[in-house]
Length: 409
Image 1 (tube, rainbow, N blue to C red):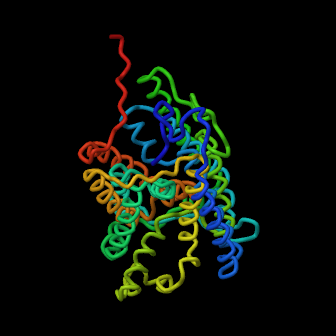
Image 2 (cartoon, helix red, strand yellow):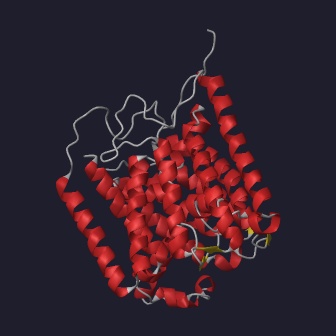
């Protein structure tokens, strides 16, 4: 699940009376409230606030259908770039918000750091693998969470094997962590605030301009990001225009920086959940090299882990949004080929995210607004992986959006 091209069917039908799914929205709302109170009492007020921020992210992701997988697929296969332009707006606002505070190292007198990781072969290889997995699994990291939370049963399969793949990635850490790489490199720290900011904004503008040129050349017009064509936007029931989603996600990520001291991430929790499951079965995962610096995480409750708290919050928020939209209706029958795609895609997503030091959120969104060089290696490698994944989608019974090129004939 990801950004939907406005020329294709949106999850919410236009101008229909919304019938709220009362039971699931009530249960999800109670779970969010109860979880916030429990985390406040057992961990901290900040951790409870991050739980709520996760829920708000889930609502935003679902209502705006804001993800990456379909946005990239629609652009690669169909030449429509609204999703990419929305991402560029999100990143532009993000660097203007984040770079000044990352440069100073403090936000509201609290220390903050970006998600800056080594840039090298493992990032290129992992991002490429992750990109293939995006198209076969049917979602990125954020897309998998909000789609699963919204009741997409296929994405539960993708999520399960995403977790399995993350554990595999953690197990083989001694191999991929020794591949050639340079040390973590922050453009903000190395270049200075102004040069880093201007360079990033220039690249975002160039990418957005490129999508406009290519889209006009192929279709004769461009899709908007400021409204939902042929549909009645609703703040309470959805759908939301892409620009609403872009702005909301940046603000929520900034709130995450303020509370957690670092930007939003997703997939480290998947490795943790899977490793904790193995630990419960008697496997001593705490001795793995991947967990050598944080062995206590294996035995700590997941409510102490920021990423886990936010991930679960995202799923509950998406459930609220799907129910408010009257769209929570799980379908339990999955065709075999589609099921195999979810399994293989999930495994690739998990392994790839670990090798690349993050996913479309931790490495792409939060990585770029952290000024990390590894994020700029991640983007083209993941894009190339998406292109290959799109080629293989029909083998798994998955559709690929296509529109004939405009000609004079």
